[in-house]
Length: 153
Image (cartoon, rainbow, N blue to C red):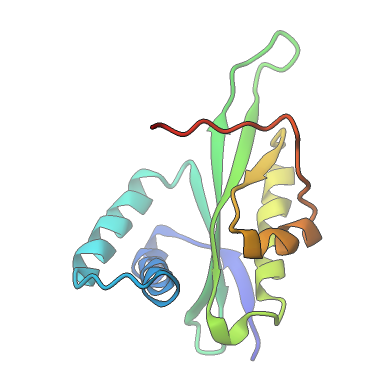
């Protein structure tokens, strides 16, 4: 199978929502019956957040979405030396099970990180499941002892 990577658009909203739904039902056992409602909500969310949440999609032979990765961009507080500061966060990376291990995830991440470089982001973070940590390490991510997380009680 030939896979093509491109930036996603708001027109991809329903298909991207379908991948999010698939991940939750297949990997996390979600049994909801409100898929159509979610697709609508997700598509509207994508339109509202398209300036800060950049989707990248993997397309299979029949132009069906077989994977996705998101780059969330956040403005940071300016400094006297850097008046424009932005960082990124990788979110919702997913490849359909049949294509895992075939380089699709790596191609998605290469595109995401190329975009981060082009945008001049100071850094990019990712919150990962333990199983995916080796994948992110292979794409250039490293553990950072200065990164802390707060969780509400």
